[in-house]
Image 1 (cartoon, rainbow, N blue to C red):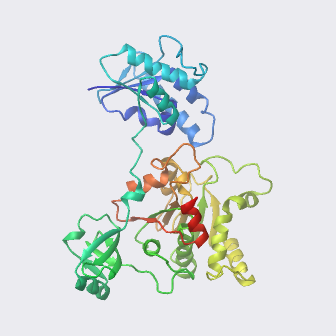
Image 2: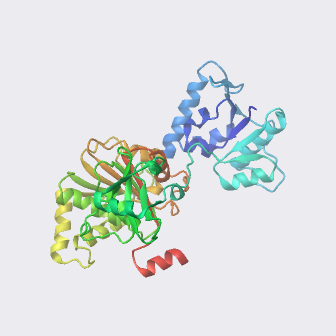
Image 3: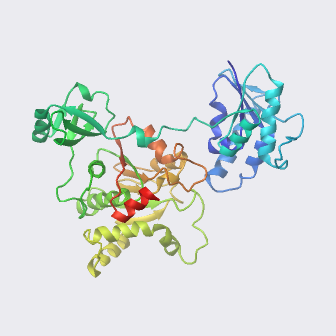
Length: 441
């Protein structure tokens, strides 16, 4: 059955091409949503870019010859029109009648009452507005097109029970193949467990090209003085050191070692092994496209408060993992930064750049939108490896959530690609106090 989908302004600001993604149904945009979008068209952020994009898309649809007031048909069988309610908002529920949300909701109610033949569904990413719509008898849904499953549940360690001799053979030969491995995702983390002795286990990673589980290649002495403290960290370090895996996404709560492991692997592959020309570390300081801000000083001084977590990790690693840097180690970090071998930059000016043969780490990637992650990953030139780290449950960006942020979307969309790997870190290793705080508070 065809349906009427009434779109809120925030849906179009999140995905301007949403108007084309409702198949053969009728898409209706309240005129008040257009007015709200118009307020953001001068912004330099992604929200401003999306506001300008939706205006251009609607204008191109309008120029096809049909009026948006009467409805423009699509090849899919659906249509698009702009709607104004027959009467101005007059909901007697104590709502603010000057609110654009109120006017948009009134439009959805008006369409529902006028068109009894088709179900009317109000689509908004505003949770409170969905609640209000439901209370007023309007069917309300969130915009699902860019939402993904929780990567923390879909990318867990896969446990496979095998006979004891196969575990021993795995240690001896470094790989294990068999029909039980067919449905594994490329680069999936695998725990082989002896069916007769539960404590007899081995860690490996699924090699989709060869169709078998290979042993982890993590140096016994660790990387830059850092050794994995749990199986998830071992999986992560194996992916971080494998140059054939070009995109790695690491998720985990505070203190699980995401950033530390990524920088340690990057330092080793750049400064010790010489595989990459540069280690570039970045994190979003605010929505992509904004200026650095009004902090006093030059660019470097402005960035220091935002990039201090990165400098803390570099200092720890260059002090050989004991956390007590001497003058020699501090000098080493300064020299690496001044020589350009290590660069710490904001994401603000990355659009238009090309980054070949670099080890690129994007920290706090859960605060990025899918479009921003696409912008960053498409900057990667030949020979570049990119690491996205973050915690989808600690999001500061008000326009994304755990299912629509760039980190979660990238992990889900790349899960079947052989050049990508994903690890969820669950155990905090920063300190006993930090782990207790993460769990208890």
